[in-house]
Image 1 (cartoon, rainbow, N blue to C red):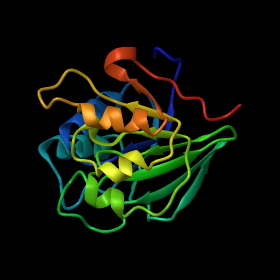
Image 2 (cartoon, rainbow, N blue to C red):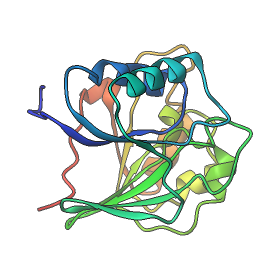
Image 3 (cartoon, rainbow, N blue to C red):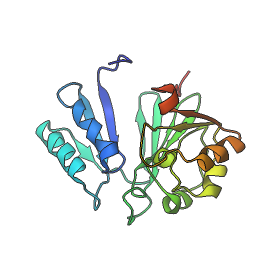
Length: 193
């Protein structure tokens, strides 16, 4: 509502953890949702079960996009780059998307940790949505070598210490400008001119 969005073509459930799916339940009955992408098996949670009960009630189409699939949404191109396989960790099972516009691209990483990060193919993007709220579960070399000019950390008040200082330091040392939702609030990232 704050940004004048009246419908959503696609909602991506990166993985089933409550902090990634519970808030999405509030969409139903308030804003039309065209389709849902998810790959939560085998890591379903009570929060994801509740969400998918609502999805069924509102008869919203659900799909699991194959890795490598590229889809056009208006002026944006979405390429599914992960998860590359079934992971033991629900965080590593996150859907990872490379979203490209006419100006720049962003890598949306969910909560992937070191194992999944190191198995991603080589990718070029200008903006990184930092995995796992900037937590210390990333691979240092991967964080330092992303090549992103902007790093966004989606984080609020938490008991886990996110983001950890070494992640912020590594991103800044690599030349990235770091922006955080706990400092800046909502962050809008234009990808098209």
